[in-house]
Length: 158
Image 1 (spheres, rainbow, N blue to C red):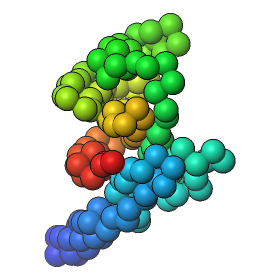
Image 2 (tube, rainbow, N blue to C red):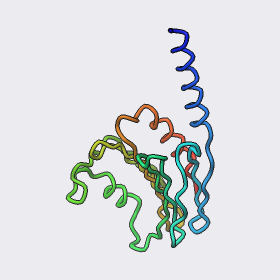
Image 3 (cartoon, one colour):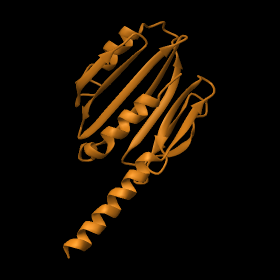
């Protein structure tokens, strides 16, 4: 019985490792950015009508990755956008709690919890364009998706 359980566990971990290692790249021509996504876990839902980005969903639609570009029409600085995005408990999002935030020269990261879900956002500012991705998943999936969030963030380039 113990051997059977061990074999089952090894097969399950192998399948998970294969799924996590299998990434594909989405490139946005309009705003010239790229991002890797785990192709066995998240599925492209089609580029938006205006070509600014795409949404990716898991089979059960419980995990989402949204990536998009936006012209900086209001001429905001990266610091202004960072301050706006790193606030928790706002009237429009009262259950948002920011637990991590970092601002660098041309990008920032904000992550935390929102009503039982984890969010991870990275925004780049390049050539007058904000390029952003937001990954959201259930808190119960933290162990599985935190490493995926890191891989996605590392791949996000312009």
